[in-house]
Length: 193
Image (tube, rainbow, N blue to C red; front, side):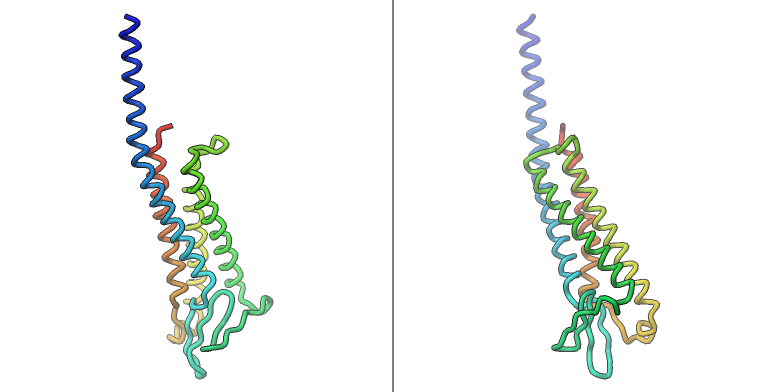
């Protein structure tokens, strides 16, 4: 009788181990996908933040393009003076820099998740998902604010201002962070503790 129970226990442990191996096999591609998506989100946001093609404006001197840090008239670019800058630019910068920090932290947690499932009793994957969703939300707020202020300006109403490629990269990073967060939540569902 004791041999039968030992065999039964061995069989059930073997089936649990094979189930964990099977789900672990599904988990790694999801972790890799979310890591790549997070890195792509971070790259898009960084490019959006640092390039000067947020707004394009037609003037009598030619095409002017500006970003969050500088304004350019063809070959010459000048950094904005801090005290002369509009408040919405400062707020947009602050939200985007905070989102960049959240995105970087989320990517760090994704990298840690390949070695550990929990860190101080907190699921590393869930923490990465929270940071990814937070980054997406912060960028969404920044982009919405910038869009609302610019659309209410007289230059936009007269079709002198248009949004540029850096602005589009910001919106693309919002979508990428949301996809990253969803992939991370899906990854968390496949992990057996």
